[in-house]
Length: 310
Image (cartoon, rainbow, N blue to C red; front, top):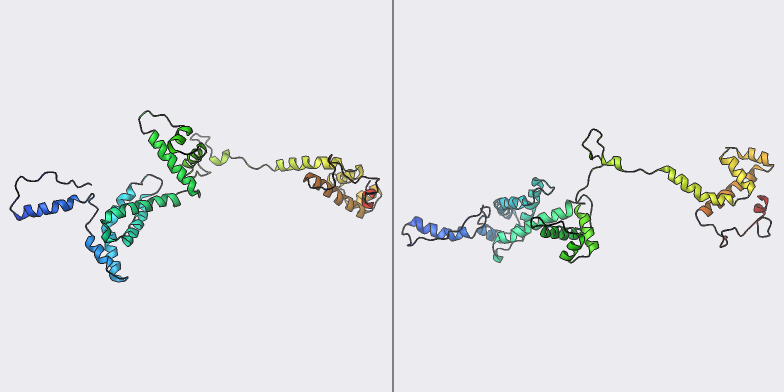
């Protein structure tokens, strides 16, 4: 509550002691803006002359108690911003303690020093502690500039919602920076995946609208990637892979059917799989620009094992 300063004085000075005391106290009362700003200059002077110890702590606690209502009043300015008033009062009290510890009585009135100190402490709390996700300082500053610009451009009744270009011209930012700040305006808090998005009987949560990874996509990608490499294999190697992986035949049965050794079947399977895998990953060496293998069956460049597999 503001204390009004008397604007008129009596036409003639009073001669009683009561009138003299009232005239003396009026200027002192007029210098205070709020009723929660006590006169504690004597305590601050005493605090400045004390060394660390129980006596200094007692004086400091007395100052904190005297000025705590002012800290609570400043905290009340930030209510309804997503933080409880109890927590805001705790932060403001911390700012008050810092102001008392740093105040120099010779620099002026304590209130003029404490108010910006406590306000800054509360604002830092919102900047550093209230974001659900850690946001870079630069993005936070862009958010504040965009928020202030929107308020200034829409303060007149009937003003339309400013566009990105309007905000950029008003703030001196680029349109990309304004867009980043506008996105940050909606990112101060997060929404639970269990939050209901529909109030009807068929209500669903946010998690119900999110897609899930489909393992079949990986299978399709792998199959299409290996298809070209399988086509390039010799017919016998393709037949061996088919009997092994699609008909689930053992290597011994495959060897008996083809009239070769089981060890040879094992080597052909390993070599064929490696060749297909390398081509699927685009890492196979020895390809010409057309993608055909340099080594072909029946040439002297082919290895003995490759000739046996042809």
